[in-house]
Image 1 (spheres, one colour):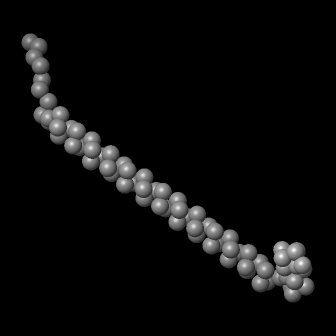
Image 2: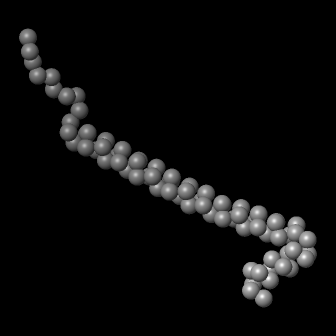
Length: 73
């Protein structure tokens, strides 16, 4: 006894679900991209703070010498 089983869901419904899933995937990718940007910004801020901290804790002579090298004076 062979018979053809008909699906319980229409093609239109499947297409709608596919579109919803594609939108969700796109939204998640956007969120990931935004987090990558935020992480990069935080990393830059951290490096700047570390550099400022390193200069602030240097002895005055070394700091002045380093500033002369950086500024070219």
